[in-house]
Image (cartoon, rainbow, N blue to C red; front, side, top):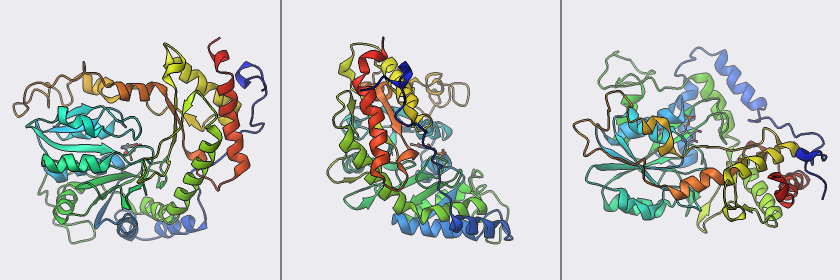
Length: 420
Ligand SMILES: Cc1ncc(COP(=O)(O)O)c(C=O)c1O
């Protein structure tokens, strides 16, 4: 096999693939232009339509269009009624806002390690983390793979805890035909630039409970009781935020939603084809799919096998990624997270809103000291993983996927040279 491109060989892709995400067509253009020349660019008809169409697509009773997934996630916490000093169980590996929203609500995040195959919070470890002050669990369905949601739901029911789903990355994923976003009391989706449904930056709060919907809606728009299409009395009934999206963004989101099923189908077919080729690579672990799960592969996540090197797996992973980039995949492969959440300064400093709040607040139990705890699975996943994301969102093309696979197979065969 030829030399690695990083070592002077010729790259697999002679011309690096240029794929634009999201794919924008005439239908998107028409929707956005109609909004642009319409007479309500704030909370207009597209926002309402997007809520209705998304809730119908995801089989939720209620939806609220927000300006980000983070806003929707914060609204989830608000809707549960969690408050000052309450503890919320969160995964030790996720996007930062899965846990920072807990701080924004003056609650205390209690980290729990993830489970290796699903990359979601480990249901077997919840027992150790729960206390009399625990009020909720946030489960993140990462990379289009549902967490072990049935077991987590059983646990939440047993301990009478609220279950919040961070479904920001997993539009359309399901377990036994029940879509993510329908297992918990409420859930958040993101429509940021990298997501399967992209609207620029936006999000969606969803729930099947009327009371949750009404509470969340109050926090969403300045603490008002009426939404902007109604006769507003400009009165703040609760501590609210400005978490609304706008008509232009919602128009774009509607356009993309219409294509979501097609995108998901492409992701799944491409992921399957790629996995079939990559089985021969002994240095990497392929994505895992539990039997009853429908994974969408919003990101195609690989892990370098830890046992191929006795130390410095992180450095080898980075060299592996650089070598793949040099084969022509620059911009299409990435290390998603370099820190597990408990290692992030915001959680270590224990000073979210100053003066030790919320950890030392009088409503909190004893000071929860978690930083010394180990989160071995999260840490290993963090140190060994890397992913392809939007590149698999294109019409399935065997030759193209074969070329992507060739990059990995080539680097896998030359692994020894990476460290030399
Ligand atoms: C798991 C997870 N949660 C929350 C978010 C936040 O979404 P947003 O960027 O729309 O605020 C993201 C964004 O990437 C995410 O991946």
